[in-house]
Length: 148
Image 1: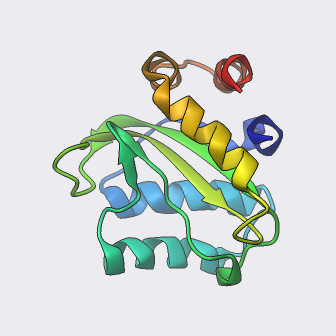
Image 2: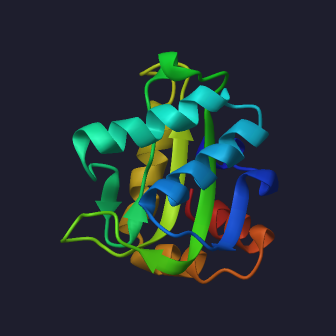
């Protein structure tokens, strides 16, 4: 379940970043700090965006950085950062980005249930806005518990 993958040590609020790459790296650092990925996974997330463009922008104001399991995933995990100031990722339709949900999985199938819950969350505009405006990590977890 999605909520089982989230802990307070994988959440940061009102993070200051200069650009999309720094935002992706900060989300990846939380995954690394939680023991979900090796440091090379962070570079892989950045390189995927450089190679494929802003495909990680999945809805208005939300980015979902990730890379392949073989790029250094140790266990399935999610990190959440809200940005102090919204950042342009290069997606005309959904920029600027205020919420970055970084994801890693050990395989391409084991995380499908968590991803389906994430899709449900992304459909809930009120919940997304609540997380973007959350004042504490506990508040983010409580919002997620209500939805998933």
